[in-house]
Image 1 (cartoon, one colour):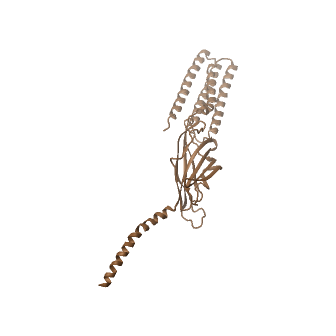
Image 2 (cartoon, one colour; image 1 turned 30 degrees about the horizontal axis):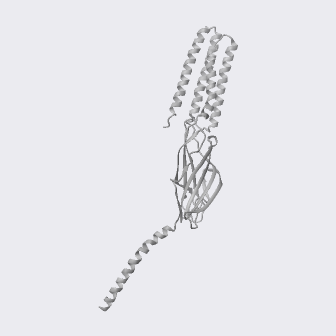
Image 3 (cartoon, helix red, strand yellow; image 1 turned 90 degrees about the vertical axis):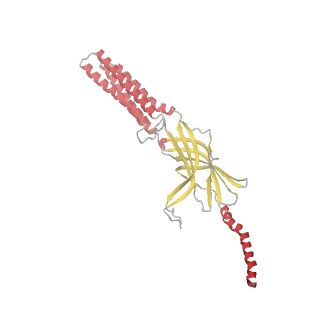
Length: 333
């Protein structure tokens, strides 16, 4: 009995000590989590220029910033790896302590690869992306993306385009294998990063008018040939030469436009040129048939009336084709 009475106070003392130690034991994992080096990363897009569909590239100037704990630790933007970058340079970088946290901002200027799809030109839309990930991000470190603080300047002037949307989001870049790192096996290696997207819509049509004007001039000059009907062989020879020159001009302009836009497939601008090519071919064929009938001494007035009817039908078909092609791509699907 005395032994049991001695055990009673000891057991109660043990229970009290456990009750006092429980909060400390429960707080230990939280303190361990607090030691994780977590940063916040954002972007400011300040310039977008040199949009080059012919060379599948564009250039941009932007700021990346990071806000990290003041204690020593890795900075996500200290050594960034930009995916799809052709060349990138650092213009200026600054690090300081603000409100007890380490704030770093770096200005980058670079050229990036982009697979331009101008098949709907001049009604084309594009989504440009700039992605980066830290080259070395230890497991004890992480970062979040500052979505609300990231934005693009309203003064951006990307030529014939206007910016319709801008945003940043977390991304994950995967590389096959362990990249040769000792002890890093597995099927691939994943690097968390940030991806900025810029949505563009063509809002200027000066470039389109510059490329399409030679085509319409060639068609207009070729249409005049339908009015040149005469028994004079010099007149008919001049008519044939004018139609042939129009044919040559359309083909050359089509090739030049295809190259300038970096096209690899049949596009809207190609269809417009093919319609013009068909009209010029009709004019050439009408010239040859008319000349043949004049040689066979058919009535000149009757041939003039026939040429005018052919010209009317050809111009109506050409104009209708242009309207259908242009309105079809006016509103994107």
